[in-house]
Length: 69
Image (tube, rainbow, N blue to C red; front, side, top):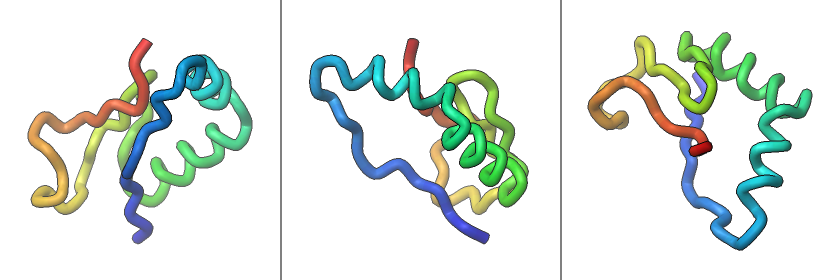
């Protein structure tokens, strides 16, 4: 199984809007579908809900922010 992990953030001014626009793109939708198919995690707005993944690499709570509005 492929493991997906965010390792850094682009915090430059204006980058947030570019990222939010990218989230609406076909490329982002394909990536989300692939993550959902491979992991069972479900994208719900700004979060991926963890389901059936190795718990020691995940933080408690069961959902992981992708972006903030």
